[in-house]
View 1 (tube, rainbow over the protein chains, first blue to last red):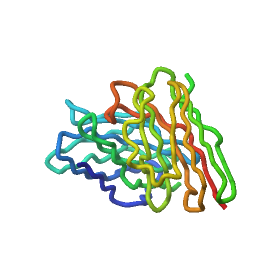
View 2 (view 1 turned 90 degrees about the vertical axis):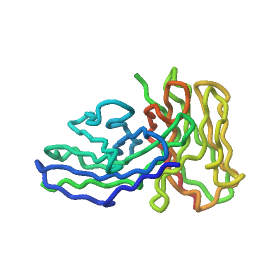
View 3 (view 1 turned 45 degrees about the horizontal axis):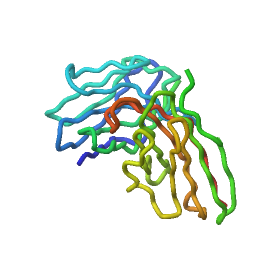
View 4 (view 1 turned 45 degrees about the vertical axis):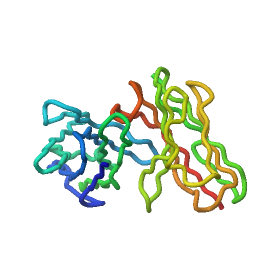
Length: 113
Length: 116
Protein backbone atom coordinates (compact mmCIF):
# COMPACT_ATOMS: atom_id res chain seq x y z
CA UNK A 1 0.00 0.00 0.00
CA UNK A 2 1.10 3.56 -0.63
CA UNK A 3 0.68 6.83 1.21
CA UNK A 4 1.76 10.43 0.70
CA UNK A 5 2.40 13.23 3.17
CA UNK A 6 2.80 16.82 2.06
CA UNK A 7 4.28 19.01 4.76
CA UNK A 8 2.61 22.38 4.96
CA UNK A 9 -0.85 23.03 3.60
CA UNK A 10 0.22 26.61 2.80
CA UNK A 11 3.63 27.91 1.76
CA UNK A 12 4.48 31.55 1.06
CA UNK A 13 7.57 32.71 -0.78
CA UNK A 14 8.63 36.03 -2.21
CA UNK A 15 8.78 36.52 -5.95
CA UNK A 16 12.24 35.47 -7.11
CA UNK A 17 12.91 33.28 -4.08
CA UNK A 18 13.45 29.54 -3.99
CA UNK A 19 10.34 27.38 -3.96
CA UNK A 20 10.50 24.14 -1.93
CA UNK A 21 7.41 21.97 -1.51
CA UNK A 22 7.90 18.84 0.54
CA UNK A 23 6.55 15.38 -0.18
CA UNK A 24 7.26 12.15 1.65
CA UNK A 25 5.84 8.84 0.57
CA UNK A 26 5.62 5.27 1.70
CA UNK A 27 5.43 2.37 -0.67
CA UNK A 28 5.94 -1.36 -0.36
CA UNK A 29 7.13 -1.54 -3.96
CA UNK A 30 9.26 0.76 -6.13
CA UNK A 31 7.11 3.84 -6.52
CA UNK A 32 5.98 5.93 -9.40
CA UNK A 33 5.84 9.53 -8.19
CA UNK A 34 4.07 12.55 -9.64
CA UNK A 35 3.65 16.24 -8.99
CA UNK A 36 0.50 17.91 -10.28
CA UNK A 37 -0.49 21.59 -10.18
CA UNK A 38 -4.02 22.94 -9.90
CA UNK A 39 -4.86 26.52 -10.82
CA UNK A 40 -8.13 28.05 -9.57
CA UNK A 41 -11.22 26.58 -11.18
CA UNK A 42 -9.19 24.13 -13.22
CA UNK A 43 -8.28 20.47 -13.11
CA UNK A 44 -4.90 19.08 -12.17
CA UNK A 45 -2.04 19.31 -14.65
CA UNK A 46 1.03 17.12 -14.62
CA UNK A 47 4.22 18.96 -13.68
CA UNK A 48 6.60 16.00 -13.69
CA UNK A 49 6.85 12.31 -12.94
CA UNK A 50 9.44 9.83 -11.73
CA UNK A 51 9.32 6.21 -12.83
CA UNK A 52 12.84 4.76 -13.00
CA UNK A 53 16.31 5.96 -13.89
CA UNK A 54 17.60 9.44 -13.21
CA UNK A 55 16.54 10.59 -9.77
CA UNK A 56 16.45 14.29 -10.66
CA UNK A 57 13.39 14.91 -12.78
CA UNK A 58 12.77 18.12 -14.67
CA UNK A 59 9.26 19.27 -15.39
CA UNK A 60 7.40 22.13 -16.93
CA UNK A 61 7.59 25.78 -15.87
CA UNK A 62 11.09 25.40 -14.43
CA UNK A 63 10.14 22.94 -11.69
CA UNK A 64 12.16 19.89 -10.78
CA UNK A 65 12.01 17.17 -8.16
CA UNK A 66 14.51 14.72 -6.76
CA UNK A 67 13.68 11.16 -5.79
CA UNK A 68 15.56 10.19 -2.64
CA UNK A 69 14.89 6.60 -1.77
CA UNK A 70 16.82 6.74 1.50
CA UNK A 71 14.67 9.61 2.69
CA UNK A 72 11.46 8.42 0.98
CA UNK A 73 11.09 11.93 -0.34
CA UNK A 74 10.21 13.60 -3.62
CA UNK A 75 10.43 17.32 -2.90
CA UNK A 76 9.53 19.86 -5.58
CA UNK A 77 11.75 22.87 -6.19
CA UNK A 78 12.04 25.90 -8.42
CA UNK A 79 15.01 28.27 -8.17
CA UNK A 80 13.05 31.49 -8.65
CA UNK A 81 9.36 31.91 -7.93
CA UNK A 82 7.10 33.78 -10.31
CA UNK A 83 3.71 35.25 -9.55
CA UNK A 84 2.16 32.80 -12.02
CA UNK A 85 3.32 29.90 -9.83
CA UNK A 86 0.62 30.66 -7.28
CA UNK A 87 -1.52 27.51 -7.26
CA UNK A 88 -2.10 24.31 -5.34
CA UNK A 89 0.40 21.50 -5.77
CA UNK A 90 -0.29 17.81 -5.27
CA UNK A 91 2.19 15.00 -4.83
CA UNK A 92 1.00 11.51 -5.80
CA UNK A 93 2.32 7.97 -5.59
CA UNK A 94 1.45 4.66 -7.14
CA UNK A 95 3.19 1.33 -7.40
CA UNK A 96 2.52 -1.60 -9.61
CA UNK A 97 0.13 -1.12 -12.47
CA UNK A 98 -2.85 -2.31 -10.43
CA UNK A 99 -2.12 -0.12 -7.43
CA UNK A 100 -4.34 2.91 -7.11
CA UNK A 101 -2.81 6.35 -7.20
CA UNK A 102 -2.78 8.17 -3.89
CA UNK A 103 -2.76 11.96 -3.83
CA UNK A 104 -1.47 14.10 -1.01
CA UNK A 105 -3.68 16.71 0.62
CA UNK A 106 -2.05 19.44 -1.42
CA UNK A 107 0.07 22.51 -0.67
CA UNK A 108 -1.17 25.93 -1.62
CA UNK A 109 1.70 28.12 -2.81
CA UNK A 110 1.41 31.87 -2.29
CA UNK A 111 3.80 34.24 -4.03
CA UNK A 112 4.47 37.52 -2.28
CA UNK A 113 5.34 40.57 -4.40
CA UNK B 1 -5.81 19.08 -29.17
CA UNK B 2 -8.95 18.97 -27.10
CA UNK B 3 -8.45 17.96 -23.51
CA UNK B 4 -10.86 16.16 -21.25
CA UNK B 5 -14.23 17.87 -21.50
CA UNK B 6 -16.66 17.89 -18.61
CA UNK B 7 -20.18 19.23 -18.46
CA UNK B 8 -21.79 21.04 -16.86
CA UNK B 9 -19.14 23.26 -15.24
CA UNK B 10 -21.54 24.20 -12.47
CA UNK B 11 -24.65 22.51 -11.18
CA UNK B 12 -26.94 23.74 -8.44
CA UNK B 13 -29.91 21.63 -7.53
CA UNK B 14 -32.14 20.71 -4.61
CA UNK B 15 -31.61 17.62 -2.54
CA UNK B 16 -33.45 14.59 -3.80
CA UNK B 17 -32.95 15.49 -7.43
CA UNK B 18 -31.03 13.33 -9.87
CA UNK B 19 -27.71 14.73 -11.01
CA UNK B 20 -25.82 13.58 -14.10
CA UNK B 21 -22.24 14.63 -14.77
CA UNK B 22 -20.70 14.04 -18.16
CA UNK B 23 -17.20 13.47 -19.42
CA UNK B 24 -15.53 13.15 -22.80
CA UNK B 25 -12.00 11.76 -22.47
CA UNK B 26 -9.11 12.55 -24.75
CA UNK B 27 -9.39 10.62 -28.00
CA UNK B 28 -7.26 7.49 -27.89
CA UNK B 29 -7.06 7.30 -24.12
CA UNK B 30 -8.27 3.98 -22.80
CA UNK B 31 -8.47 4.68 -19.08
CA UNK B 32 -10.97 7.01 -17.45
CA UNK B 33 -11.19 8.09 -13.82
CA UNK B 34 -13.79 9.92 -11.75
CA UNK B 35 -12.62 11.86 -8.68
CA UNK B 36 -14.30 13.97 -6.03
CA UNK B 37 -12.52 16.89 -4.39
CA UNK B 38 -13.57 18.50 -1.11
CA UNK B 39 -11.78 20.66 1.41
CA UNK B 40 -12.17 18.04 4.12
CA UNK B 41 -11.20 14.89 2.24
CA UNK B 42 -9.04 16.18 -0.59
CA UNK B 43 -9.03 14.30 -3.89
CA UNK B 44 -10.74 10.92 -3.77
CA UNK B 45 -10.90 8.34 -6.53
CA UNK B 46 -14.48 7.19 -7.04
CA UNK B 47 -14.23 4.73 -9.93
CA UNK B 48 -12.08 3.98 -12.92
CA UNK B 49 -12.60 2.30 -16.27
CA UNK B 50 -10.19 0.59 -18.62
CA UNK B 51 -11.35 0.03 -22.20
CA UNK B 52 -14.87 1.07 -21.14
CA UNK B 53 -15.04 -1.61 -18.43
CA UNK B 54 -15.35 -0.60 -14.77
CA UNK B 55 -12.30 -1.96 -12.98
CA UNK B 56 -12.69 -0.70 -9.44
CA UNK B 57 -15.67 1.14 -7.97
CA UNK B 58 -14.69 0.69 -4.34
CA UNK B 59 -14.42 4.46 -3.96
CA UNK B 60 -18.05 5.09 -4.81
CA UNK B 61 -19.46 6.32 -1.51
CA UNK B 62 -22.95 4.85 -1.68
CA UNK B 63 -25.40 3.07 -3.93
CA UNK B 64 -26.78 6.48 -4.81
CA UNK B 65 -23.71 6.90 -7.01
CA UNK B 66 -23.38 5.12 -10.34
CA UNK B 67 -21.11 5.51 -13.35
CA UNK B 68 -21.25 4.25 -16.89
CA UNK B 69 -19.02 4.31 -19.92
CA UNK B 70 -21.11 3.21 -22.90
CA UNK B 71 -18.31 3.89 -25.38
CA UNK B 72 -14.73 5.08 -25.56
CA UNK B 73 -15.67 8.74 -25.88
CA UNK B 74 -18.27 9.24 -23.18
CA UNK B 75 -18.86 8.58 -19.49
CA UNK B 76 -21.45 9.67 -16.95
CA UNK B 77 -21.50 9.87 -13.18
CA UNK B 78 -24.99 9.87 -11.72
CA UNK B 79 -26.19 10.66 -8.22
CA UNK B 80 -29.75 9.70 -7.39
CA UNK B 81 -31.07 10.96 -5.05
CA UNK B 82 -28.64 13.78 -4.34
CA UNK B 83 -27.87 15.01 -0.80
CA UNK B 84 -26.19 18.20 0.47
CA UNK B 85 -23.10 16.21 1.53
CA UNK B 86 -22.54 15.35 -2.14
CA UNK B 87 -21.57 18.97 -2.77
CA UNK B 88 -18.04 18.95 -4.16
CA UNK B 89 -16.02 19.39 -7.32
CA UNK B 90 -16.09 16.28 -9.46
CA UNK B 91 -13.24 15.65 -11.86
CA UNK B 92 -12.91 13.30 -14.77
CA UNK B 93 -9.45 12.29 -15.97
CA UNK B 94 -8.14 10.05 -18.73
CA UNK B 95 -4.84 8.39 -19.56
CA UNK B 96 -3.30 6.22 -22.22
CA UNK B 97 -1.26 3.05 -21.90
CA UNK B 98 -2.22 -0.35 -20.63
CA UNK B 99 -4.43 0.78 -17.82
CA UNK B 100 -3.60 1.35 -14.21
CA UNK B 101 -2.25 4.44 -12.57
CA UNK B 102 1.38 4.71 -13.60
CA UNK B 103 0.62 6.81 -16.68
CA UNK B 104 0.05 10.55 -16.30
CA UNK B 105 -3.58 11.50 -16.03
CA UNK B 106 -5.16 14.40 -17.91
CA UNK B 107 -7.87 16.14 -15.94
CA UNK B 108 -10.93 18.05 -17.05
CA UNK B 109 -11.79 21.37 -15.45
CA UNK B 110 -14.34 19.74 -13.17
CA UNK B 111 -18.00 20.14 -12.33
CA UNK B 112 -18.75 22.19 -9.23
CA UNK B 113 -21.83 20.60 -7.69
CA UNK B 114 -23.94 22.29 -5.03
CA UNK B 115 -26.85 20.44 -3.48
CA UNK B 116 -29.19 22.72 -1.54
